[in-house]
Amino acid sequence: MIYPSKACMALFIVMPVFIQQVQAQRSLTKEDSAWFSNNIEFIQQAPAVLSSSIQQKNWKELSNFAANWKLSEKPSEEFILAIQLLNHIRNKQFFVIKLPANYMQLLEAYAYEIDAANNNPHFKYYISLSSVFRYNATVEAEKIFKILGNWAQQLKSSRQLSKTEIFFCDVFAGNIARPKRALNDDEESYPDLAAFDHYVQQQISHCDSIALGNRRSAKSGTAALMLGSWMPTGNASLLGNAFSFGMLIGYRNKKNEYDLIGSARFPHSTNQTYYVARSDSLFSSNYYDGFYVGFDYTRYFIHKPKYEIGFTSAIGYDGFDFTSQSGDSLAGKNISPEAIGSFDFSNGIRIKYFLRPGLYIGIAAKYHFINYCNKGGTDVGGNAFTIELLLGSH
Image (cartoon, rainbow, N blue to C red; front, side):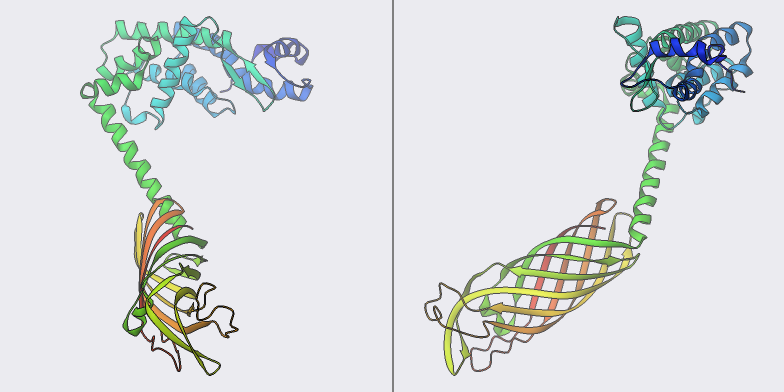
């Protein structure tokens, strides 16, 4: 049952009072007043309903009022929690399992507000109605704190309560300024609350895992930055190991990922001088500047909430530039082509660990089958290993 505000019986009566209590940057229209009045009727009626229900022991009316207030567009959650819990304690129906998951947040807010109402002469309690208007409910809030505080003290002194029930009564009476700290300092005295908090955290973690799994299982784009090392084998080892950097962009579903990859290797001097034949001439070089472009497919065979592992196969093109402006034997000469390249087929493994939904760190290791053709020059045939660190998102 929703309790209509007597002050809202006529719009022309509401208007002057409401304008006094609303801080705004524009004029208040009749439509504003009508809509806002519906959203403040519970806070306006709360002191009278609480006082009347407690005096007349009309606990059903009190319960209905709190339930309807909670369903309204502008509920004061901390007051509603206090009303409901004190009513449960009064009727011997208090059970920890009935607590909302955010009960501690609401207790902290209530304790902070009642302390300010009792000790801070500048205390204000506002209800935000829109981006422009807010209602000054300070008078109503102070009355509610007083009524609930007296009721909590009465329940505490007149009934045999559990330690947990006494704790809530003390909070609502304004005797505990920091509820969370009080529980943490004496956790052994409240095993029921500790068990409930542990259960809530488990449920939150479970929901987070489900959310993470659902997001990763959904179809989405992928992108990542890569930093790693290229390590040639065979005759290609004379080119030396090289650091690489690059990026990937692609698409994935639950267990399959398709990526376009591009990477470059930091230029460096090779382990030894090598020769390249161009235009019936043989040129020497000790310069290396590599690159790779390719298409990767990854199939994840382990797919967990926080990590996944998959096999990767890729095809691409791998090459390196052997010319340099600083190379004495090549400087100023028109040499074409300036790169040596090869088709690249690779296989490997990719591992990802998710820091949060959509953000991961990972490692990818692959063995590349390549065959640099340097006809007439130094044999640089061989394959290569790559290992790369990834920072990416889905």
